[in-house]
Image (cartoon, rainbow, N blue to C red; front, side):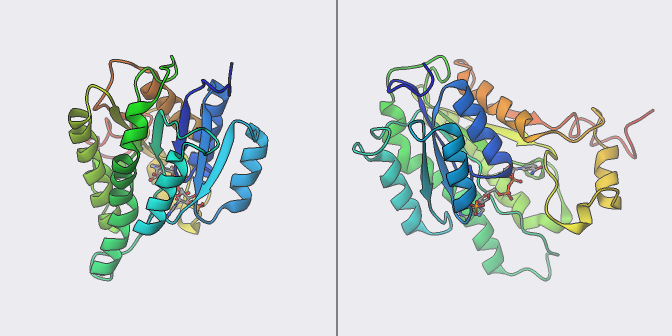
Amino acid sequence: MPGSPSSPVALVTGGARRVGAAISRALADAGFRVWIHHRRSDDEANRLRTEIGTERCAVARADLASPAERSALIAEVADPEGPFDGRLDLLVNNAASFEHGTFEERTDDDLRRVLEVNFVAPLSLVRGLLPRLRAARPPSDLVPTPCVVNVLDLGALTPWPGYVDHCAAKAALENATRSLAVALAPHVRVSAVVPGTVLWPDDPAFAEGAPARRRIEARIPLRRPGTPHDVARAVLYLAAAPYVTGEIHRVDGGRLAAAGVSGPTEA
Ligand SMILES: NC(=O)c1ccc[n+]([C@@H]2O[C@H](COP(=O)([O-])OP(=O)(O)OC[C@H]3O[C@@H](n4cnc5c(N)ncnc54)[C@H](OP(=O)(O)O)[C@@H]3O)[C@@H](O)[C@H]2O)c1
């Protein structure tokens, strides 16, 4: 029964809004009990908790750039006296920053900040929560062995000149996904989702009809941007597939496959 005391438990970082909210909702709809992590989106997190049901959903706040706040988040989720008795079957490292700027104008401190949130924090959460992942019982069809899903970005696999720091951090997480899949087997599986564009950034440069947006749309063979639910569906698949680990799973409408095609993808 969804949300019963034996249901598996997931933690979704940045799970209160946008793509993270779609993942939190889809996991809850499938039968997971869900920890929604957030930093600034208190209202969105609490609204989503009410929507999912307070018995099946808990909220935790932490700035993932802060090692002390990461440790507190780990302790809260792992607490045997906590809402889900410290159980954790699935960790979805979704939270990320998306910082833009030319290489020359950005600084070493900018680079360190991006690496801390987009690369160090996901690994730190895996390390801190590993004992709870390894202990998760009983197994469920939703997640037959404990699992980590890292949310990457096409920028991990292909260069974006205005986002050097972001791409480097996501590329490091892509590599770590494969290393961890080997290091943590056979008890914990580790895979990643690589979304293409599924929600446009809140930036006028990507407004409806803007040239940057039309350029991206023209490069998607499936002829449309994806949706947050497309990403959530991939997370559910990776969690449930018992023989899948180390998988870097693209959800990009074929955009990377078409990367070598010059100009729009239509004939
Ligand atoms: N949107 C897309 O089309 C797209 C495309 C490719 C990949 N992705 C990837 O998919 C994931 C979600 O994308 P999105 O567009 O929904 O992301 P987003 O809105 O830019 O950020 C997601 C969440 O990350 C949290 N976050 C950021 N910095 C944080 C920090 N220092 N500490 C704790 N939390 C922090 C924020 O939580 P609060 O709001 O609570 O502060 C935010 O809601 C990201 O990993 C992104 O790289 C997205």
